Image (cartoon, rainbow over all chains, first blue to last red; front, top):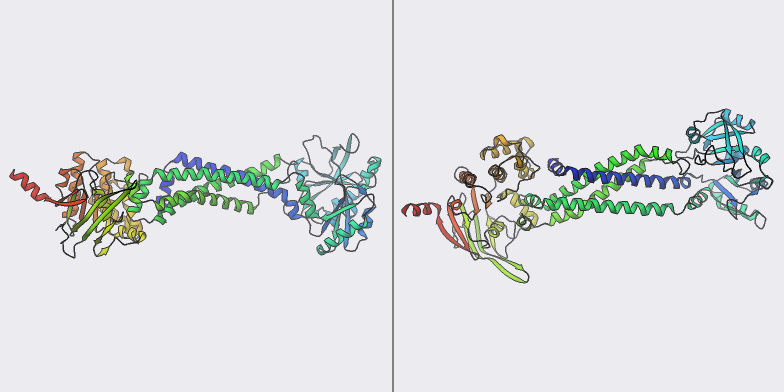
Length: 382
Length: 247
């Protein structure tokens, strides 16, 4: 503590430089946090996927439909608890930029399979009674200020022309933190009645609830074997594998984020390292005097590192605060384009750790230089 | 009693024997000090003079434990410092040596009080004890009313007084002054020399000083000349004054 005054006095020696260095830390931390949040948003599907669920799609591809008759056949396989099926509706609400996923669902088993997506009982019963009924995720409902009873027109882009109209009967919430609350559910029967001929009696994909996660491999194999050599062969995989595959459709997000993150890290390291090196070089004679009067090389190293770490800490905290304030706003602006952006405690901790690591690394080389500096040579330069 | 012939008492405060210092510059060896002997007793005030490059500052650096000799030994208050490790030598400096530099070398972002307090941060003194020591030291140099002034708010002479207070605050065994008046006008130089002289006469300090200025050197008890790395005993300041008076 008795050295704190010396460290702080040196920190405030060049105020403009101090502010700029702290600013560079803060901006880098905002960027780092944003990248980490985006990465986490993309990988969240994999993380929160049910371990006891399988997704069954056509072996040809996601866009290829399968007969609705598969539902009962899958249900008959030992180890299967429930099966629901979905269709991608792909409509537009008012404007194309208002994107949110719309799924045609099978009300009979939907809640038994997607147990974490909860709809109040009375709302669900109203939905079952209403052919044109719809259930919206809480996030989407909030985004468009919908309330129960609203009539919602969705312009179709895949199934003929014009708009389909739905009555909002309920709003679902996810019981899992970070769960998807952006979906919009429609009744399969209403869809099937109005869908063009080739679409009728089909499902886009099946979601299978298992008796036990241990059965996943066996049941997936049994499903695919059951439909092997048929006109509609299937590909079954765990929900997490399916989510990972889905994310890959966007490209290698992880590599992209890692690359940008590395560039941020090294740029920041070079900027702060250079600043610390200049700062130490400017006061070579002062550090030499400190050593002359009895401060050890390690003490001098400590002073330099302490300065660098304090800059990193302050810059980091400012950056994380800015990110904390900005990410919900950015997330709102990017709704529909990106999965929900959630700034978790782990990302904040990681960000702070990142800042401290860069701070310590940037002060290390100049600090070691100061520690090893020969007093006689340094004083001669004065 | 200061001697340069290696025949001083075994209990001299500072005892230098057979000191050599050689630098290597571009493959060439430059011998700065040659078989130098010196004995300095407690309370002595010695000035080293000599032309540029004669080895005055090198000798001061060696005596202060800032540099290591090529050969020979330096013993201060019974401790032989020539074979001490880097860290031990640093601790030794903190306890035994007070440095006064030509350019004052104060930390510009610290106040006079904080600059003087620096050596005490290495001790176990409490905050209040440190304050008492600092106030005493600044009082001795006549700057008790400038505690909270930054170096930029002080004149050159006042800055050097703060540097002297920093040098004496931990009550070191001896003071090393490298051209302490080299950056000052005559009036300020006289005041600083008066102060250093008082430290010797009133506070019993031992002072070793390098200077180019013969007037400044006369304030010392003895002036030693360094010529081509060899110490030559000069006249005591009293002898100089008497010689001047006879003339």
